Length: 234
Image (cartoon, rainbow, N blue to C red):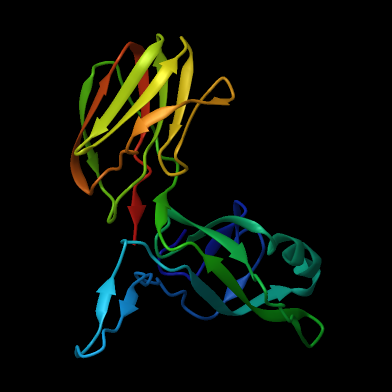
C-alpha cells in the first residue's frame, strides 16, 4: 500500500485496488486507552487508581468512501463479520476487528453512478505483526528480542520426547506434566497446553515476554522448539 494514500485491507482484499474504493478522509492511527480502575476513600483527597496494564477496544471510523454503482453488492458482502484490518498507516501490522458491530451502514446514491458511505471497525486495542515467522531452536537456553511495545504472550510448539517439560522466561516458570513423545502446543494467552487434542496438566505461571531482551529456558527431553513471540504494538 502507498503510505500517502488512505487505504485499508479487510478479508485480504485491498479497498482501493480490489474494491475500487475512493477514500476522501485520512485514516487515523489510534492510540488505545489503558484501562484503569479508580477508587475514592472517604477523608482522603483525590482518588486511587489501579491498572493491570490492559487496554480498551476502540472504534476506527472511515468516512467518505465512494464506490461505483456496480460494486455495491460486492462491497456489502465484503464489509461484514470479523477479520484482520490493515491500514496504510502501518501496513506490516494488523488489528483484530469486527466490521460495523451494532451499527447499520447507510449507502447514499450519488446521481445513479456512485454510492458513498462511512464504515466503522470495532478493533481490539493492540496490533500484531503480519506473517510472523517462528524462531526454531534445539538448545535449552535461547535469548529472544521482542520488538513490541507491551507484554507479549508467546505461542510454542514443542517436539517432546516425553516426560515433564518446563518453560521459564524471567521470573515466570511453567511445567507441563507427563507429556508424550509428540508435539505439544502451548498458547500462553489462552492458558492452554495441548497434545494430541487433549489438555495437559500444568503447574506454575504462564510465561510472557517483556519488550526487548528475554532469556527463554526449556528443560526436559525435547527435539525442537518453534517459538512465536506474538509481539504487540500500540
